[in-house]
Structures are given as structure tokens and as C-alpha cells.
Length: 247
Ligand code: PEP
Image 1 (cartoon, protein in one colour):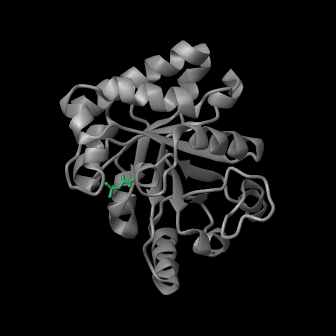
Image 2 (cartoon, rainbow, N blue to C red):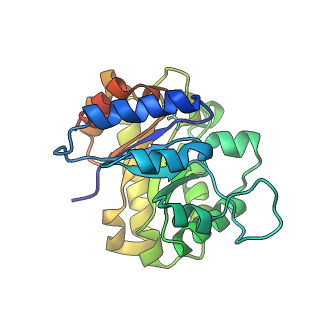
């Protein structure tokens, strides 16, 4: 069975005290017997805190440098994340593509650097509203995934977690319907099967975009949806864990 994952992207939110409180709440409410792996992705300044405070969850970063080390002021390397115990890292999020110029080539370099440091990339893809309206979603995700995974061996590709996040659903309150999400997840699964064969069957494909306790059950019941990448609803332990308990 594929790994079920619910990952929380905290983005640039929370004070240190609020982050501590959220981790405390998650730790006290999380039932470890559930068949779902939890990943929390706080701001990089709270990664250490999260690693020290958590006992059952994994910790992920929201971004990383593609470079190895050296004079790159303000950057954080994969080796640094790895040495702290960070296990996952989000790459290719639409906000990074849109506001920070992360190109497909750069995303590909980050994916390679993460894998070389034994960190699992959560590789995001997804179309904009105008691309959805012109029925370009398959073309967009295949281009983003094809470039993001370029040059990787099948074994390396199989280590990646994919997150399908339609840009029009992120932070907007609009969720893709379960049918829309399943259709594109099935397309992504077939795309991965084409490039690496049966090894693709173990790749978890997460849905992201206004996922909340009210819609998680229907989304997670779909055959090719293996969990979620959660933004807004991850900032509250009760709603985040309700989503994780929706399998
Ligand atoms: C995200 O940014 O990855 C996301 C899914 O956000 P939200 O859940 O708030 O739409």
C-alpha cells in the first residue's frame, strides 16, 4: 500500500510562541495508531523547535537552496536540513514559482540536491485558473513534473512525493471536486508509470488546495489520492488532525 501522508504547510505564519502551542496541541491530540503519516512544515526558523518538540510526526522544510554550500547569504542548504533531522522539503510550490521566480530548472536542481541528502522532496504541480478554463491542466502538470524529475533514475523518482495543487484552489476556499481531483491524479499516476514503470505505484500523490475537514473524506476516498498538502487548515491542530483522520 502507498504511504498516506498529510503534510501541513505553515507558510510565513506564527510567532515562536504560537508555533510552540500548535506543536503542543498536535502532540497531545494526535492518535498515533492512525494509518496516516503526519508531516509539519514550519518556517525554517522553527525547524529545530519542531524537531525537538515532536515525537510522532516528521518535519519538513518549505524551501531549500539548490547549491551545496558557500557564500550565498541567507540561503539554507540540503546538508544543513539533513543534519538537523529534516525529512521532507516542499519544492515547486506555486507561491515560490509566482513570487520568487522558482523555475522548472531550478526546481529540478533542488529535487536532485534533496535526494542526494536523503530528504524527500514534496514536488508540487498544478495549473492556474486560466489554464484550467482552457483545459490545459494535463499539459501543465506533465510539463512541470517532466522538468522537475528530469535526469533522475527510476529509483530516485520513486522516492519523490508529488502534490497536485491547482493554483485556483490554493487559499481561495475553492476546492477541486473529488472527481476533478481524481481525474488529474489518475493522469499523474499514468504519467509516472510511463516514465518509471511499476516503481511509480509506490509514489504518494497528495492533493492540495483548500482541503479542510469538510471535504477531506471525499477527496481521500479517491483511488489515486494518497493524502493532502494543507495550508490554512494546518494552522489549527483540531482541523489539521481532523483532515489526517479522514482516511
Ligand atoms: C498550499 O498552499 O499548499 C495550500 C494547499 O493552501 P490552502 O490549503 O490554504 O489552500
